[in-house]
Amino acid sequence: MLILYIVISAVTGTILGWWLGEVFEKNKLKKSKEDAEKIVKEAKFRAEEITRKADLDSKELLYKLRVDFEKQNSAKKNDLIQLEKRLTQREENLEKRLDFIESKSKELVRQETSLKQSLDDADKKNQALGNLIEEEKEKLKRISSLTPQEARELLLKRYEEELRGEKAKMIREMEETIKEEADQKAKEIISQAIQRCAVEHTTETTVSVVSLPNDEIKGRIIGREGRNIRMFEMATGVDLIIDDTPEAVSVSGFDPIRREIARLALEKLVQDGRIHPARIEEIVEKTKQEFDKRLIEEGKSVAFDVGIHNLHPELIKLLGKLKYRTSFGQNALQHSKEVAIIMGILASELELDPRIAKRAGLLHDIGKAIDHQVEGTHAEIGADLLKKYGEHELVINAAESHHEDAEFKSIYSLLALVADAISASRPGARRETLETYIKRLRQIETIANSFEGVDKSFAIQAGREIRVIVQPSKVKDNEIAALAHEVKKKLEQEMDYPGNIKITVIRETRAVDYAK
Image 1 (cartoon, rainbow, N blue to C red):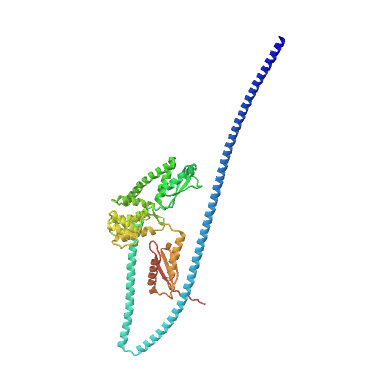
Image 2: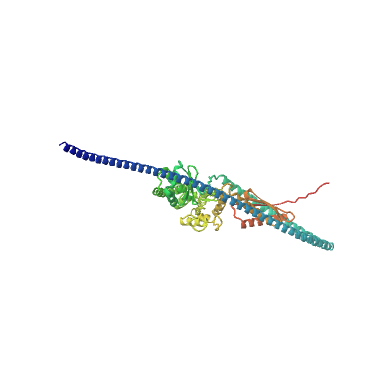
């Protein structure tokens, strides 16, 4: 029995030990699995953290590389621009040197020709003097054999020739006096018209600047991958320049109306804050409609200021467009307004109808509003527009002939020519580059120097007058007027210039001696 108990106990202990071992192994295996899963989770978390950090580092590196590239690109662009400017300056200097060399060469040729001509003239004069001496000798021989009656007739004939010369001289002096009085009266009327006309003048450029509240808005204007700026440029037809200028972008374009619409639309977008392609298209279209109304208001305003009524609505809109059109830096609308005022004053002084004169002056350049869209000169285009909208024949003729492209049919056309020249040629009214100004003065002096007998010439009064000094041995007093007329004709044929150029010919004879 004891043995049986011992055997049973042994078997039971063995079974229990085996079971406990199995349980222990299972618990150990479970714990190992849990530890393994925990390690895997920690490994995954660390891997994700490392991946995120690497991603951030790569983005930061990419941003730094992009910034460095943009800085290098900007620096290279600036270097290229400076290089281009230096090359342009060198080209201009070379052209100026070539012009100077050519002018000197022509001057030497002219002096050589003048010297040869002087020698030829001296030979001819010596020969003529010899002939004259022989003629006088023959006359003395003939007079010595004349009767008293024949001598008296010869003397009367000489007196008659002298009186004829004195008579021609008196007539010429009277003509010059009358001309001076008429010129003086005309100058007084024109000066009064200019003094009574006060119109502001503005200068347009090809770039408009839009102020921004901060530099962050530049990124929103550009948009993702540049889609906003592309949409804006496509909708407005201008170039949008976004550079390093703080809190500002530039709108560039040669069409001033498109540029103004783009500027207004961009200001609205910046103020609104919602900048995306659909909103850009909506704002630009709305701005175009509002701008048409603004053109009509501008046209009505200037017509009211001048005192012109009953204009066709299309003409009023075209007048508004002239505000955004320039000619040599002079605003076309302000120029038209000034011409209208000057014409009205001149018409009043000449006892003409100032209403017709003002109307013709205001509409004389109306063709400039669409001359970039229609073939022909602005005078022809303006005349066609005025015919289309039923303007008076006098107004139409003033528009088509104010540059002498058509025949003058009334005094109003001549007034339009005069008022247009006054407004355009007044100092400060138009912008002119220094190089163009110097070339024009040099061309005036070259034309004057090309005539025989001219010693030197000086263009003064900003090219409004040329003073020509002649050699007294080659040009006589009675030849001065003819020389001035020839200079005038050549200037009119070879040059285009606003207003008039006064030609003054100066002849001076000096006698110099020395007492010892």
